[in-house]
Image 1 (spheres, rainbow, N blue to C red):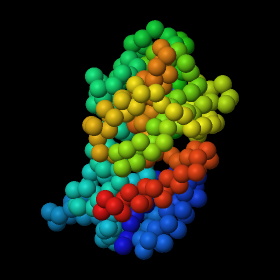
Image 2 (cartoon, rainbow, N blue to C red):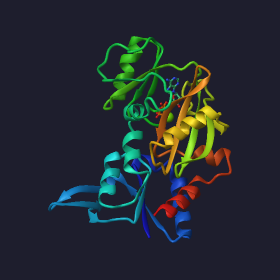
Image 3 (cartoon, protein in one colour):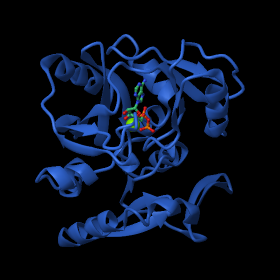
Image 4 (cartoon, rainbow, N blue to C red):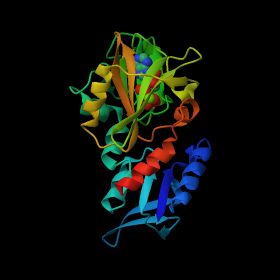
Length: 278
Ligand SMILES: Nc1ncnc2c1ncn2[C@@H]1O[C@H](COP(=O)(O)OP(=O)(O)O)[C@@H](O)[C@H]1O
Ligand SMILES: [Mg+2]
């Protein structure tokens, strides 16, 4: 069986151990994982048929694990009958903060969230506000703005995305990630910033520890699970007014903190789940 592990080129370096682990575990199960970079792919319509090429050669895997933000590619692979993990619906909704907030509005409590164009000049909420590129991940395009000058320049940083804007929550520098595997809770973790940053992303210098979610949050997770069919994602919550508010869903969710702070092997769990669902 041939499987693709699809990445963007500039994400492979920091994930090389993770990639090697997929390849090793795959081998033990008779699955040959190939690292495929989106930059090597060509796909579209040719002679009235959909085509898919790697480095100019027609190719088709038995399944693909999508470790990138590429909803159109996900949709394409699904259309030509390749099983993909996560599925294209999850990729489309969860990689766009606006679609995610629209999808889950009325289902679970969340922070007020305005969708703005990057040429917006006036914040929709009183300062301080948080500006995020609509498809940001890893906290890389998430900014705390205390005034109009910061607001306008943060929006420029979001280019070519549009942005979402939220009030700053009352408890900053920590959040909760509920890992979901096969549409069930795998593990909940609290992430916390260690350097005063308001963002708790591990990629921004945050650390993490196992965390027990309360029953209200668990109920909210269940409500979210009822709207999707997740293979492996992170459902994230931020602290506000003494409770956890839904923040976002990470599609190609990182696993470093599970390896560092638990005895779970998420790649092994994910692979077992994939094999069961093929
Ligand atoms: N409204 C907010 N108020 C306070 N902190 C926030 C708010 N939104 C996000 N954060 C912090 O910033 C981090 C990154 O924001 P997030 O929405 O998760 O974007 P990304 O997809 O880039 O991770 C969150 O993990 C959280 O710690
Ligand atoms: Mg996040």
